[in-house]
Amino acid sequence: MGGEAEDQQSPLLRSCSSPEGPLERTDESGSLSGGLQGSSILTFLYVVYMSIKTVVFSNKLNSLIVFGPAAILVQKLTDKSAWVFFLSLVGITPLAKRLGYATEQLAFYTGPTVGGLLNATFGNAIELIISILAMKSGMIRVVQLSLLGSILSNLLLVLGCAFFYGGFVLHKEQLFNKTTAVVNSGLLFMAVMGLLFPTVLHYTHTKVYFGKSELALSRFSTCIMLVTYAAYLFFQLKNQRNLNVPLNEIPFSVVLGWIMGQPMDLNCQLFETATLFISVFVVALMLQEGTHYFKGLMLPLCYLIVAASFFVHVDVSPGVQLKFHLV
Image (tube, rainbow, N blue to C red):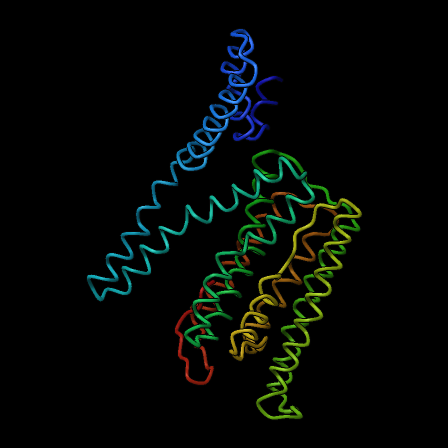
């Protein structure tokens, strides 16, 4: 049991609790002020050293960080954009992993509820950074598709793998609080509504102001989503429920585009919006009455169907022709 308790403790907490030697030697030497001050400095330096060691060298995946500088060199010295993309993709993987690790460490101090909120809020930092860089270049469609791909992969692939591992490997059926599942499903469908109505408005040609109604509706829906997000945070903290914040990167991206003067809207086109709606509907069904490994298996299989659909789909947005999407 002692080994299990130690494994559940934060690695940073274990590193901070180890330097007891200097403090004990200071008390035995009889030096009160200078000894305590010197031991405090040594303890601080030791904690900093152990924290850096744990964060940087605790995972073999961190060795892939060198691909990031390699991508910069390839971009400067050659015109191989495909290699730049591949090296950047590999180099950013450990950074995304370290971001999740940092929020997990904060959860040891703030508790699982606040820690879950931090993970859900800052876990999408990579997508937001990509969105900022793409919007600065006016690549609105790339932003929409990258966010959509991130959402679909988290809803179907990541969640499904987690359910499958919990049910098949651990041989356990995951049970959820019914209120939690209903609230989570409601948030998912509300976010889909924000994307659905600008798309329907565009394809039914019922806009009051041509070229402006979709953007205005998207920004209004975004404000409503942000108010709902704030209310959700209050609900989360008050009721101590461990939920995930779904699709929160979409309203933040619209607000960023609004600030940057870019026409970032929620019209993700008909095919993409329909795919997201069906995916959310499937996940909402899976969250009812607990889950097991077979439900976990179905979600990645649904993801494969979605991926195949996007592979044969050609984007028809004005001025953009993408043969595949980031799913």
